[in-house]
Length: 218
Image (cartoon, rainbow, N blue to C red; front, side, top):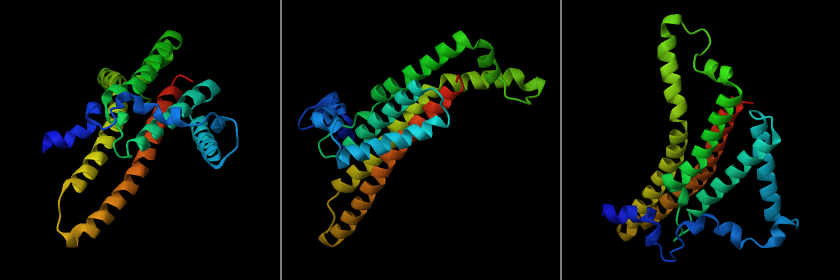
C-alpha cells in the first residue's frame, strides 16, 4: 500500500512518461498568439503578473529583481496547478526542483551582499538592542538561520504539495459502500478546491519570502 501510495511522486510511473518535461509543457502548448494578441486568458495572465509585481515592489526597488521574482511566481504556480491534472507529474513535489529555485536565489544574495556590503551583512547577524552577553549566541543563531534559508524555502513548498496529493490519493483509493460515494465525491471536490488555493498560496509564500531575503541587500 505504501509503495503504491508514493508512486504518484515517481516520474517514471506515469502513463504518458513525460517525466520532468511536464514542468514546461504548459508553455509549449500555448499558441504564439497568446503573447501578442489580447484575449481573456492573456488578460488574466497580465493581471496576475501586474498584481504580483506590485506586491514585490513593497520589498524590492529594482525592476530587474522584480521581473525575476514575478516570473518565478508564475512558473511555480503553473507547475503547482499542472500537478492537479490526472496523469501529470508534479515537479514541485520534489526537492530537486524546489532547491533549483531557492538555492541560486540564496547564493546570489549571499555572494552579492558579502562582496559589496560586508559591514551591513555583519550587522544583520546581531539584532538591535541585543545584550552584550547574548551577542555570540545571536551571531550563531542568525548564521544558522541564514544557512538553512534555501532548505526551508524548498521543504515548505515540497511538503505542502506532497501532503495535499497524498490526501487526495488516499481518499480516491478506498472502495466505500455505494451509500457513502456521494459523501466521498463531495469531500474530494472540496479537497480539490483547497488544493487549488494551496497551489497559489505556496507560490505566493515562496516568492514573498524570496523578496524579503532580497530586500536585505537592496
